[in-house]
Amino acid sequence: MSDKVHIFDTTLRDGEQVPGCQLNTEQKLVIAKALEEVGVDIIEAGFPVSSPGDFESVTALSKAIKDSSICALSRAVEKDIEVAAEAIKYAQRPRIHTGLGTSDLHIFTKLKSTREKVLERAVYAVKYAKRFVEDVEFYAEDAGRTDNEYLAQVVEAVIKAGATVVNIPDTTGFCLPEMYGEKIRFLKENVKGVDNAIISAHCHNDLGLATANAMAAVQNGARQIECTINGIGERAGNTALEEVVLVMKKHPSLNLDTRIDTTKLYPISQLVSTSMNMPIQPNKAIIGSNAFSHSSGIHQDGVIKNRENYEIIDPEEVGVKESLIVLTARSGRAALNFRLRKIGVDLPTEELDNIYQKFLEKADELSVIRDEELKELVAEYLKVV
Ligand code: KIV
Ligand code: ZN
Image (cartoon, rainbow, N blue to C red):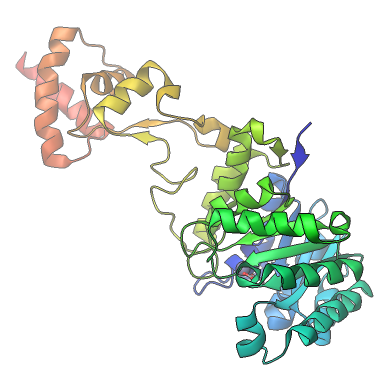
């Protein structure tokens, strides 16, 4: 029996706060419904105290979404918590996400406070949020750079105060996977009452380690991953939802499972990219335009013989129609033959050899040969022979 990992999507909060990615309520509703259909457990809908527009969107999502929990972010401030509670009051499964910085850097230079006062504020915020909802998640901002002993004290205190989930954000994307995994294990082994709450991983991608860190967390006992579609988010972004879900799916030996319907991943990725005007890098894992396209002759030959030679994911498994054999000057005869057959042209080996030379000349000139050019090439060739 595998353990369930809860997927907490923050595309509409951590993702949407990226400059240029702002959405109106209608657009957020479309994305939230798609997230619900994909099987996301918790949708972080926004930060209601931040603006009237965000408050309105969180309220609208609370009314419309039935299956996923709706979560609202707040600082550890009474007013924020009250506004968050108001915005999610219609939700079937409301959650308040409250917290503050716990690293010495945040405590001394940002909050201008002390460890003792921060711990008191953390406990107070959780208790205050509990007046409004049962499901309260606490975040220890910059937990990635927080001293583990102190972090354990905070986590223990907020769980005692009623936190149902405790988020351990690597806010600056600083941690190495071993460090982050070790931090989670330390909490699991040293916090009294730790099993009364779910430990959550929230990783940023400043060093390109967000997915690796989130995986290290679940391998050490975290049971919620906070992530975004396409990995969008502050600075270099957050853990990409599609990546962690596929890692768990492709490695059953981890014994970790999610509720995500992976066949809906590509469509939702396209929806988020177009709604937010945020192009996806072609080589992005799982959903990039090159993720299932093969261009070198050796790989093309291998894929044509057996897809699994060079693909660990069946494209249909993530909602992509098919793998692509891209014709370039690096392609071999097998790829040319494969693509010719796709346009209904079946040539004997000798003729294939002849047309292949013409193909190479054209590919050197054009770089990529599409079906149109391939048809022209065949027509020219047939005129000559
Ligand atoms: O990165 C972070 O620390 C956050 C918190 C507000 C959860 O996004
Ligand atoms: Zn974040």
